[in-house]
Image (cartoon, rainbow, N blue to C red; front, side, top):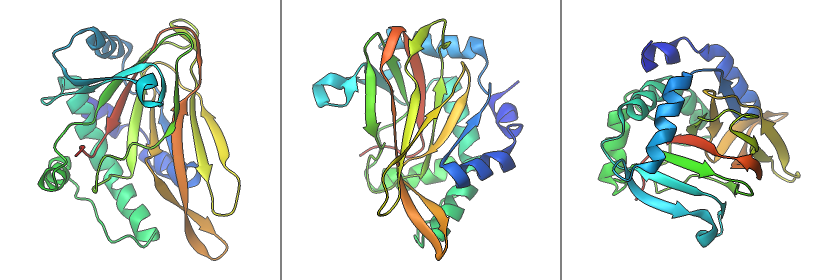
Length: 235
C-alpha cells in the first residue's frame, strides 16, 4: 500500500478533533515495520544527509540527528507529500481562529516555493538517534519567517525491544497558567502529529492561543530512531 493510500485511510475527522482538543494526534501503525527499519538504517549512510548535529554541543540535550538533503529519500518524500494536504485545511482553520492572516496552499510544492522565495531553501526532515542516557530538551522547530503550524514524528524503533525509556513528551503553556505536560504513547510505525508553536484553544470568551513544545525523555537502554517531518524549509 502506498503512503498516500495509507494516509488517506487514517481517520482524519478524529485526527482533527484530537488536534483541536490536545494539540497532538496519533496515526496508529501508519508506517509499516519494514519501512521503519529501512529508514532507520539510513542513519549510517552519509549520502542522504546535509548536516549532522550533536545535541550536547548546542545545549539541546544528548543524542544526535541528521538533516536530510534534497532530493529526499523516496519514502520520506512520499510521506511528507501525502501528509501535507491533509493537514493544510486544519492549519488554515487554526490560523483563522487565531486571527492570523497567513493561509496555506493545498499543494506542498507551492508552499515550499513560498519558503524558497524567502530564502528558506534547506530541507528540514531529519533522522534522530538516541542511546542510553540521551534525551531531547523541550523545543519548537522554527526555522524562518514561514512556518507551517503542524509537523509529524514517526517512531521507527520498537519500545521495550529496541529501547526502554525515551517517551515522547509535550507541554502546553496557557496564558497566566502553569504548563500542562503530556506523555504520548507510541509504538513502532506510529505517527504523532503535533503543533509546532501555537494553536487555538476555545475559552469562555472565544479562542485564545496556547504555546506547545515537545521533546523526548531520557533513554534507559538500547537505541531509538525517529523520523521528523517538518513541512517548512530552513533559512
